[in-house]
Image (cartoon, rainbow, N blue to C red):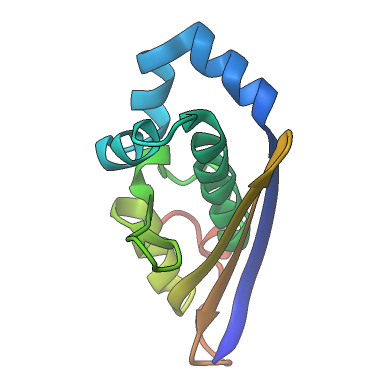
Length: 141
């Protein structure tokens, strides 16, 4: 396996709390999937979990080297977590096509939150060290 990209993001939980309080469902439905919202709302305080998921999406976009370009939407990147299992990032739509174009096989994800901060790190790994050019080098596919 080879590393195709690395991304990290840090979110301040108080800022996320202000955004959620101000925009409520309008923000949540634009950024998070129904499953992510449901998962976070089951927690005593959903905001740190929302912040960690937001950081995960940002970190993944950085690992792909694209940000919110090339037609990728927030909801195409979904953090899933089963009890007792590490979090995983499920991709769909354009984000999945970009990972495939990069020669990526898996996005490894680590999340944490403590105090006022939520942090995520994402590593895109693949098998072929020679293949997988970057989509921005060849235009949007």
